[in-house]
Image (cartoon, rainbow, N blue to C red):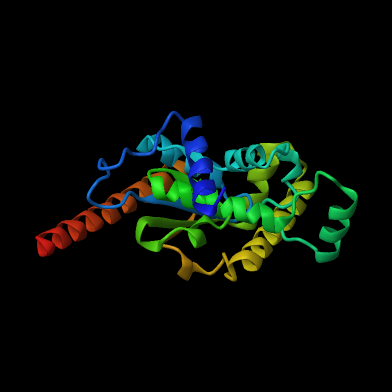
Length: 240
């Protein structure tokens, strides 16, 4: 299976899991469909905001289910991919794992499948993708890139409430998870995910309710879609 086929296969499987299908040839809109890519600090309610955005738009949300589908495509249980999902790798540890664990999934192999899945979803459009460097994979002209941030104390409180952790445990989870996600993006995309210049929107969920953040994202999307439609219409008129 070549890269293009892999991308279509992964994206189509993810779309079907949400009852969606890729548009039939010739039925695509004049302007390419948008995708929303949500980057988030650990504990900054990324999935909650994404789900609310998806609900308002009627779009599917892809987060952990991307990992599940990649695992299925690689014929591995999802648990075998958790060590490389949004996590950096240690070269020596990777080599040792490859020698002693016959079910080991290399980080480079995982990232190849991740790129394919995200690009396939982006080509279909009209979906929300959480994390995994999606905004660095998808084309800027058809992607609304969002970064969610929050005060450390609020992120710790969110995590403690979600997972039933003590504050100390939640604080360590937030610290470790954030460090791993940043390292994953830097290694695979050469970018700092904390740099606000990579995003169309940076929203502080310490100052916004989930519903407010989602409303801002949807409104910004509508503006981007309208601009793209006007541009496509003008280009069509020029060609004609």
